Length: 144
Image (cartoon, rainbow, N blue to C red; front, side):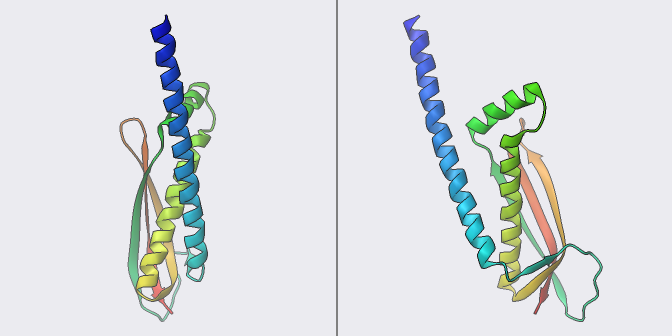
């Protein structure tokens, strides 16, 4: 009986440590994203596909894959059992989407563009148990 309690205690301690590190990494990533979004706010995004312009454009794309931590996995399985929104996964998808758009703007900035037209996002679930999400962003960069 004592060995079982010890194993449960170790699991709980490791689980809490993992949760803490995962939460810290997520908060750090969100702060970095916010800083990059502010820095790149001068690049406008337009999701209209057919807009005439006399300026030439060039295809730009970005790709990001983000994985959840073990804590989010456990919480998502509990939420999935009862049904409803999987809020723990929603934050992972939002972070991936924001990161893909930031990378797309960085690509456009590197070529001297001031606008991205026809923005499209594609999301794919990766992994056997949905542990990762991929977001692919693309559009046409227009030089200013």
